[in-house]
Image 1 (cartoon, rainbow, N blue to C red):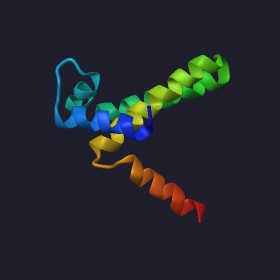
Image 2: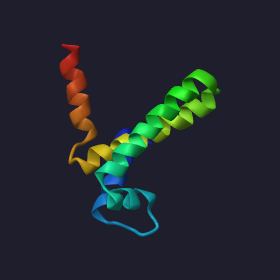
Image 3: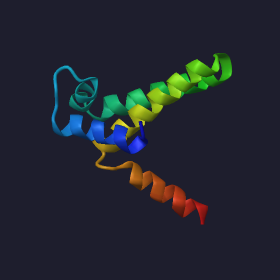
Image 4: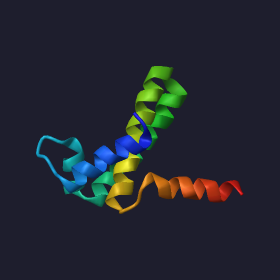
Length: 91
């Protein structure tokens, strides 16, 4: 799955909430909860990098990526905004 495809799914859940959707529940809980999850996942990435195997690290990076994309959507931003910033820094 591409980052854009995942973001499209996240954005769809934001625009069309479903009671069964974890993503929809995150949006309903609001920006503070989403930001908290990003912080928690970031910490879990550090722990996995230092003390766990590669599979666990990959799982935690996937969680961090997902929650970061939810955060972007909650703020009205997209992965394209991040890529544009990375491109700007490359110059």
